[in-house]
Amino acid sequence: MTSHTPGCKKPKVAIFSRSFSKSAGGAENYAVNLAEQVADEFEVHAFCEWSDVSHPGICIHRMGRTIKRPRWIALWLFAWWSWRQTRQGFAIVHSHENTWYGNVQTAHVRPMRYSLFARAKNPLATALVHLKIFTSPRLLAHWWLESLRFRGGDKRLVLAVAPALGDIIASTYAVNTNRLRVVPPGIHMAAASDVGSSPALSKVDARKALGLPVEGWLLLLVGHNFEKKGLAAVLRSLALLPADMFLLVVGGGAKQVDRWRARCVQQGLAGRVVFSGSLPDAASAFIAADCLVHATLDDMFPLVVLEAMAARVPVVLSVEPFCLAAPLVQDGGAAWMLQDPHSEQEIAHAVRTLRADRDLCQLQIDRAAQFAQNHAWSQLGLRQAQLYWDLIKSEELCS
Image (cartoon, helix red, strand yellow):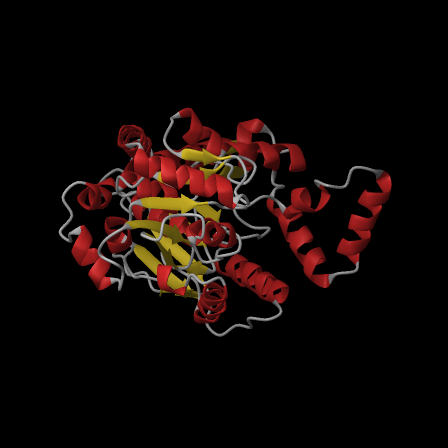
């Protein structure tokens, strides 16, 4: 790999991420981790609305006071501000947000254009979608920014976090495959191995610290959007499972937690579900858990799945199209695959089987650990750095 020569000035890289924080969500965590991985070879500058990151190799530029609502205006303001800040002096401008600027664009979700038109099967339905877009300032703003983002010719690289997402982008916006790459999320293997093999905290101590029952089988669900992560079906499945099975839900804001806690009371599950809120370090949750249930309804390449695999926690995961990384996981036999994440019966069957069949459970754990090993942040950082160097070299040849 081309690398930085000692004594020479490092190329400057700008990173766009509105919330530059590992605790803000999967896409934000991804942006921070990759920035940290390339910070030794490049002079990294992060442009954001807010950040809690402190890294010696990353210079944080905060936008300052901004509006939060309506969100589409906030998106345009951030796009304009980040463009103004980085028009000169940067070898690479890498955006994790919808913006017209940047020679590297990482897509973390399906394009809005794809989502809106996927179900429009006839000319009338297509016309109605267009009418919906052009009569909504919010949709129109997103549509325009997204369209600008995927243009740019051969000098703009488009990165997808899952192969299936790359295929969707290519077909939706006619992105040439020669400027489309896949860089999935990763995992810090050293820290994860400590959780999975010889954790400093025992399972009993971890459960006590989180206010959980010491005995019994503990299911884990992690996410910021409980509806999208399939919590409703997981709660229904819990009612079908033995009384010594419990659920820990990590993430979510206070209002969301209060709503779902009330639903647990209504369903008679209050004593079997614990909401921890967001945790500064989820390691204790993985130590405490016996199984991660990720019955997601819409995910690309969920980082929490990799974290569970590396921590040697068996995983129950939705198939494609609910999770676009599912084909990779399924090929490696690294998780129990849910054909229908809405089905509480299927979730309950998966959990019962993994608990009862220890050999099957251990086989899945071993395969999952190998899958996670192949997605170490250190390796993905090398891949990302090489993409930067290739792009810099190609622009130098053209200049």
